[in-house]
Amino acid sequence: MRDPINATPEPYKIKMIEPIHLIPADERKARLREAGWNTFLLRSRDVYIDLLTDSGTNAMSDRQWAALMVGDEAYAGSASFENLEAAIREVYGFPHVVPTHQGRGAEHLLSQSWIKPGQHVAGNMYFTTTRAHIELAGGIFEDVIVDEAHDPSAELPFKGNVDLKKLEAFIKRVGAANVAYVAVGCPVNMAGGQPVSLENLRATAELCRRHGVRVVMDGARAVENAAMIRAREKAWKGKPTAEILKEMCRQVDAISVSAKKDAYVNIGGFLATRDAELYEKAQNLCVLFEGLHTYGGLAGRDLEALAVGIREMVQDEWIEHRLAQVAYLGARLEAEGVPVVKPYGGHAVFVDAKAFLPHLDADELPAQSLAAWIYEACGVRAMERGVVSAGRDSKGSNRHPELELVRLTLPRRVYTQTHLDFVAREIGALKRRASNLPGLRFVREPKHLRFFQARFEPLPVKSAA
Ligand SMILES: *Cc1c(COP(=O)(O)O)cnc(C)c1O
Image (cartoon, rainbow, N blue to C red):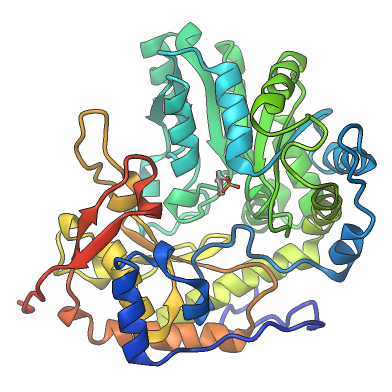
């Protein structure tokens, strides 16, 4: 592996630019207050470098832009759908494809098709929209990720793996007939983008098959997972990413995908499967919630750009550069003394907010606070992944995940090395004065996915011990 501090040159050059500005410090303070100290409520024009998410924020290639022009906008039977279907069959290997407006649309179709109220779904840590849809369908979620996933300092290659003992005990406890399916996230966003090994995915699928339980993959960033397998798993070292992705997909019955991640498009998603019955159910629900089953809430041009993006995303040069860029940011932050989750994820570097702000208790929302203070310090927008994202349990208490993280997510093909240097330098400077940073408390808390719309206010500054 290349020394991450030696940046890998971008495998592209810039053809079109979009200006960005750093607004003055007093304005950032005012905008943060107006946003209720929630980075999701900031206006994009007030953000300098936007690392909130890589979802739908990627830069399309010239080929993708060109493809927009040939979109077939027919209501039914669009040629662009055929192109998308062909790309998904070729790259993911599933015969049946239902397009959706984005990933949660696919999760909706899947959970409504396969969960009967009272049934259980096991997964390797939860994802916010995934769990919300499981619960909306009357399902009960069970986390069966390996214990190491909860330790931000454990430097292991596959911290996203399913704990097979936990999974087997769970199936035996609730009974296979009461398991709607097992959902494997590859990689695990909430654990810091940690990947699942092919060996583990295979063993998970085998275990499920033995018990007659169906397996699905949350494949929003499956290409990143494949590239991390290529880099870290002995049996697959240096094999083409495309081949590894196909092999991953071969293990599962279906895949739900947010195309806004790997596939470089700004909107889109799909559910793909080899299960004819699921296909039929999901197609029918699609008509109700998304649109006709050959466009699923997308324009013909979106389907066309997605088909091109799917073929681009598995090219080793692209995905390798992406991982190298994330590793570069991680190494720069570490050099500045910023505590980060190791190994770095495929899409983001996660800052350990508990270690950054050790003087704050969990109820003072360290990660939410840190995301706010990063924006105030340098106009960089990050996202909380901790107690606020975890929400409340069925009894109404705050869930207290062990990981309290701030995610610095890199949109694909958008920022340059100089931008990343700025981010690392500024967050490093903030770390050196972190003992004066206060926590936050809720002033408004929405019922569903509260992190998106909640408002906060700062608590009094604690004097450092
Ligand atoms: C983004 C994402 C989703 C949801 O997809 P949307 O396109 O945002 O609806 C689901 N699972 C994972 C792992 C994701 O990263």
